[in-house]
Image (cartoon, rainbow over all chains, first blue to last red; front, top):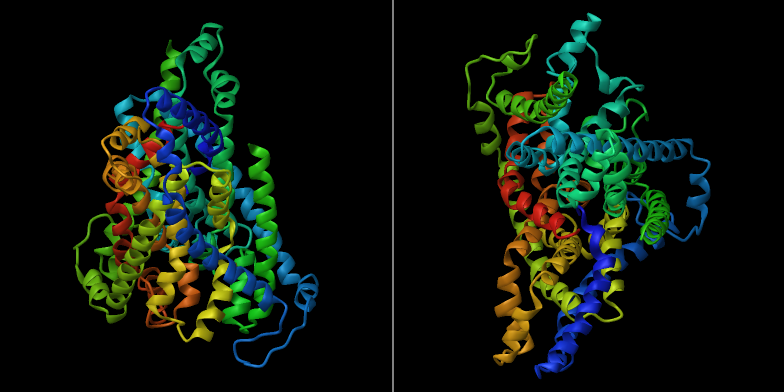
Amino acid sequence: MTAGGAEAFPLRWVSCASVRAGILLGNSFGLKAVAVKTGTRLPIVFVIPSMVVLGVLALVPTIDAVNIALQNRELSNPESHYVWLANFISLFGDRRFLNAMWVSLEWEIITVSATMIVAVPLAVLLFEAITPRARNALCVLFIVPVLLPRVSAAYVWKFAFHPLYGLAAYPLKIIFGRPVDLLSDPHTAMATVAIVDVWQWALLFSVIIVKLFETLPRQPLEAARLDNARTWEVYLFVAIPMLRAPLISLIFVKMVESLRAFDLIYVMTRGGPGVATETLDMYAYSQGFIESGRISYASSMAVLMMVATSIAFTVIWKCAR
Amino acid sequence: MIAQSLRQVAARATIGVVAFLVVVPVLWTLLSAFKHTVDIETSPPLLLFKPTLENFLYVVERASVRGALLNSIIISSSSVLIGAVLGLPCAYAVARYPTRHAADIQFFVLSLRFLPPIAVALPLMVIWLDAGLYDTRIAMIVTYTLFTLSITIWLAIPAFKRVPREIEEAAFVDGYGAYAIFFLVALPVAAKSLIGAIVFSFVLVWNEFLIALMLTTSDAKTLPIVASELSQLGFDVPWGILNASVIVLALPPLMFLGVLSGFLNSFVKRKV
């Protein structure tokens, strides 16, 4: 799901219009293009199987998640009965859950904003300061981090941050005169994991934004330059407003993807030190799987996440259009 | 003039630093995968050393890694294949036969990406346990099809829209039926972008971690899970072995770097 969102809706109208134009054109040439659209059951044959499969695969777990969340099911205990909202009520008295909610929110804000703050200026630099050939080469290089499996990326950086023999920790060791373990300090752990996330996503985004700059018409930018605008002013007041819609889509994509940080956190800190980097999915995982096998309790967290993200993303998606 | 060239130098230096930050950690991991443990556990970090293949041999000779590699290949490619076989026709129909529901279908497919993976994994764990299919490749393939199918549809719709309508109309005039137009015209013309979409869905499930972690315990474990477990060998983290496994795990997605970079280009370019 890269820049997926940006085009769908405007393009839909364009394509509707072009269909109508095509029909008119087809008729006038006697092609009866209409028949291509209507005289076949192809849409039904092609669409229904996918929708049935997706519907079953998405709805069954979703409904079951709600169902499980209303019970008191545990992995170790086959007996269970309905406790209705008891799990949800106890969640809000659970300080570890409240902490996880806060950590998730913090993670979301840090990674989304840091990604954009790094990606946009980097894209401007790539567009302004180097030759197109060098730019194209770097654009290939910069998507390497995001292609790495997150487990790989997490280990690459966990190794780099290793207090004793890590490459990134070595300068710190010289500066502070002692080994510095960024991942086991509650004050720096979150930021350190976020660096890896931004390393993966900001570089991909800078590549996408450069390609977006390349598609812009040159005249408005040159007009701004002739009016003695500085480079940063040209971008801030002309180029970026012109790319408002795709940039919002990118932010949206990053918000959705930032929720999938489990693997990164699992490998790098396991939610630690203490609960400093324990996000909601991390806590739900440890409740449902590791520590106590309280599937129902974990499910109730998952359901809350599902409801919150579905509402938030649907609202944002519809509003941003 | 001087100020301008100074800015140019600063800008290039910044880009250089970023490129350095991309290359060096990965390269360092690669180098360390060829190091003996003594050469890794030294400070300052060692650039010249006697290389060894020990780590890679250890990784590829481990039964658990081989099993996981086979699982990953079977699970990823099966779910990608199912996603493509079901998803490409669906995307074509949505792109070419716009109805009132086209937008709804697109939003539904997109909204599947909003589902937190944990909210899918937890109930599926229960469902597969009850069905007696927990920790099997079948369960993983079916689960992953949710992701490959939705992402394939989402990415293939624009690819089919880009096929010039005139070509399909010409085929219609030549007496091609609707299905023949799809198989013999639209599919080959859009092939390049479609391959990009399919590869993307492959990378997505190859890299997937949380769901595999919760839905497998031994028989159907995928490579990311086994790689993450290598850090628990003995009491000390065997960084050489770990680095070798990180490289092995990352190779398949990186093989597709060229395809995906081209796909990204065409995807962004068309938009404006």
